Length: 512
Image 1 (cartoon, rainbow, N blue to C red):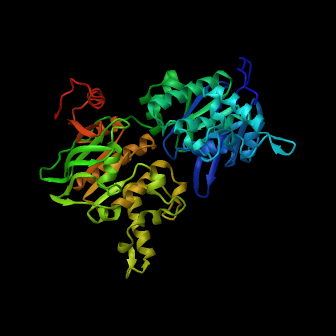
Image 2: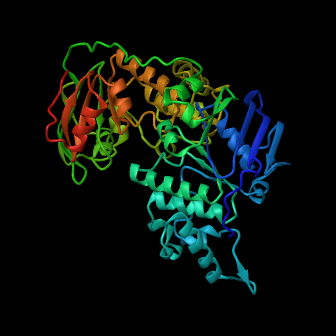
């Protein structure tokens, strides 16, 4: 690989698109898109799910072809008709989840499909030498070249994906939600890599729903809404709030929903609940119509609590009570029969049949309700239920036969949630309910959660999104070192909650 050199001020715009549009049948994914990316800069691309940014990225990566518009690269008009065209130009894409072979070494992954050969055989020494050069650029030690990818952390695997992209002499690197699955420490490592690449002249297109991080890493930001680019601005000229308002096309209302939780006995009680190696002595109670959030830092044990309530793991201590009656769900099916529903954190792996239609995804798990004589599915009834849930949750789709894989992240999340609501649950457990969705979809999901609580469902939110927990919950409990500690009411601040989560000695329980 030839390391890119920093460009001079006279160098033309690295990549620009003008008047690009794209239609899929009756759906206009992009109406009109313009964007110009300068050499050696980080250009953020933001917008709500469904705004058109993913389609624009696919066009630049060669996975889709634009219907209209022009694309220029280093000042010359180009045609990108395939991924091969994009790679030949020097455009590479790294997706949120590393697309690597875990059983192969780093060097083997980097050169899969484009092996260096000598005398008709793979030149392992040459490959390893070039990978060492790439690893040095990314700040990784040379020994990683021969390490098996399956033994690396997610952050390190992501860096390997970047190395693979750079092995093709990438001049433009598209990073699609690169920080979504990383810890704060790993995000800092990623930012260090991005800074080294831009210093070497690589242009970065950075897509993220974490708007605050754009002010750390980006130079410019292009905002898309409803299939159109709203504008491009220097990041220093905007605030997070201004970006959000450009994305949603209006002024945000930060007011917390004014709710009154009805009196009554607890609908869900966790008493001394424990799971060896994960959490212990967890005490929670939630009334019908109440929203309670469990918040904890990574490694606190908070993520495993919801899964245990739903029967995905068996508690090793304590009890779970629903309406005062002790229950012991040993599987998700038993939990469902008890009136407990779960929205899993990993919707792709645990919540969706991606290539099946929306109607199938909503009906899955409800065959007794939708089948005739428990023998075959009543397709007419299945479609009716799907249409009803699509309308209720405002899923943006042309019809219920649409494959879930074609939906935006926020709409896919609504489909997973819709499945949980076909049989109205008594208890709804939501694990990271808005992870990976945009601001507009987040607001809609919050509205749905509040509506469910107003209808009498007891809602337990398990989250690492503190701002969300404070915004939506009637009460918030902190999980630290595997157990529930402080409790906060509607008057909580992020400073107070973080202090409790970090174990500040002076933090006292607040029940405002």
